[in-house]
Amino acid sequence: MTAGERRSASASRLKRARTRSEEPDEDAEGAMKEPKPLRDEIGGTPLAPESPASAPGWRRIPLAGARVGAARANEPQRRTDTRIHADLRLELTPIDASRDGATGQVFFATSADERTRNLSRRGMCVRCERPPAIGTRVLLQLRLPGESSVDVIGRTRWTRVEFEPGEYGSRAFALVGIEILGGAPRSLARYDRALGQMLALEEDPNSPVASVGGHR
Image (cartoon, rainbow, N blue to C red):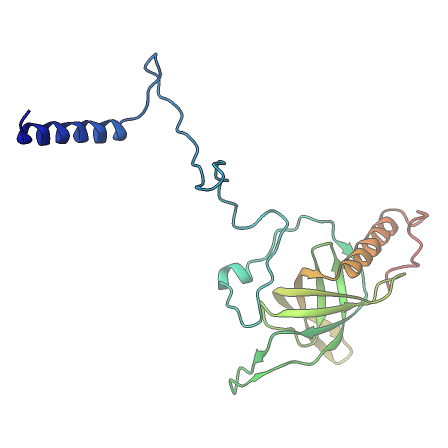
């Protein structure tokens, strides 16, 4: 076999090999075979599928100053937990800086004593005289019945202005919806325990579990 014939035969074999690699595998009966799982280069174990961007019930707390998509950050969460009507003292302190609408200057708002309207495991509705801007992270120091003060981190999701009738006219105030982002394990445990007691009291005032003496 001449050198030219050897080169021609080699080119033919290479072409046939490429053609076979592009064709799907078939079994003895002509049925298509399932593709083999990808393997890593070290242990030979199948690669795990990509994880979802966020698992159910899990929330990422953005760092201070990190931008959050406006539509995502301001979108109200669908209620999935029981809401308990409760009028409790709450100290609300904004964590993120605010911007003055008139001057454009950045400042940190001071804490204020507010009252809750209702509570759930994942959020609460708060009555505020000066509501934080939507998307602001806040420190919530809640005075719970039968428990010591609980500190949790939340984010404002919505605000609504309401009016309270008075002797000399109506007084405006804001209702703020706050999503609870997290907190210390002990604080969250006390919060869950107090919610359970208040729920039992709301459903059955004579329940032995409901021994907190009311919501105020």
